[in-house]
Length: 74
Image (tube, rainbow, N blue to C red; front, side, top):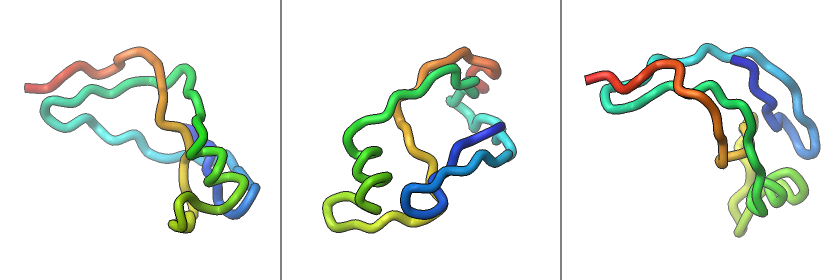
């Protein structure tokens, strides 16, 4: 899968990462869109949030939407 990772202050890069198979009780979703929120803006603009510094590289965005590509495993 292709991800945009924040790898240093104010710098993103596109990288390929392997997609993991879902564990029992999980699904795999192909992300079609992802929102960002205030915490993501702090990570990008200030290098951390609430006194906790970023650990690079990191992928921002935790409000995704998409389609299930691998259903729940028993």
